[in-house]
Length: 311
Ligand code: HEC
Image 1 (cartoon, rainbow, N blue to C red):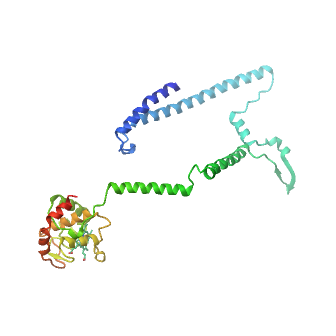
Image 2: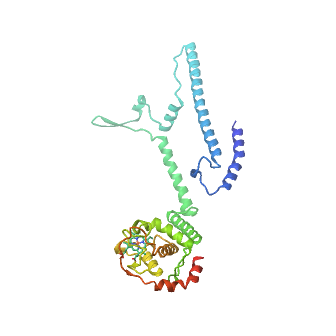
Image 3: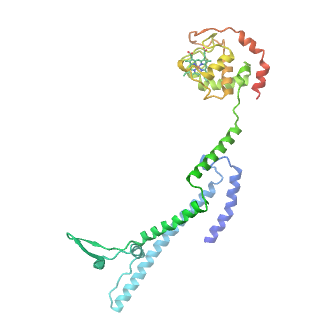
């Protein structure tokens, strides 16, 4: 029986390993029902349940057997005409062995001879379980001392901490290398109505800005972004700077901590793209009329921006 189960396991193990190789990205808890290891785990649970059941049945059988043995001993004692003394259970024997307690009837043998107003003291043995635990700590202490302080085979707390920090640093480095933060050349920033970038910017606007500037840029808590009036300038560089630095005193936060440089650029492109769209329910103009001149000079630089957009 044991051998057969072992054989089954050796058959299943490589299967499990193969399945794991095929889908390394998904962990078991992402989708337990369709996970390739599920049949294997289910089988292991089944084997566990069966093992427990076998144990329970075995214990019950033993108990039944015990009653028969006891009965036979009783009959034998009766036949011999002597009193039947029940054999103590293994648990009682173990308990006696572990505690080494002096039975109540024999307490007089360990009674000390002093007497405090009728209160007397027994000189009981130390319980063996406690003594062995104590000896165990001594042995453990010697092993610990040798491993950690003599041979330096295992790292102490401080070393452990440093190892973990080094590991985390390495992971961070790997992560940073995998997703370099694209930087924007703010000096050369110019508007181009690149549909791909603008639609990216629109998505960013919808989730971050529309709550204050409204869906179509008509303005709400924040100013109207579609009219020709601007508080902080209406050129692409002005808008990018406002988004990046914010106007914290007036309720417009700095987005540089939340958005990546190219995301701030894309959302700025989107704002440029909605100028003059005259959405419904516009907020009253704020600031001064922005002259188009700078936008025109920037449109000359379209080439350099496209080069940037391609990175
Ligand atoms: C919590 C509200 C709020 C959110 C969210 C918000 N803004 Fe603003 N925004 C404001 C306010 C208020 C002002 C006006 C600041 C002032 O009075 O100087 C402003 C001003 C601006 C201006 C300058 C307008 C001008 O007239 O010069 C731009 C550009 C702008 N926001 C873009 C954005 C972008 C892009 C986002 C999303 C990434 C965004 N805002 C998110 C509240 C907000």
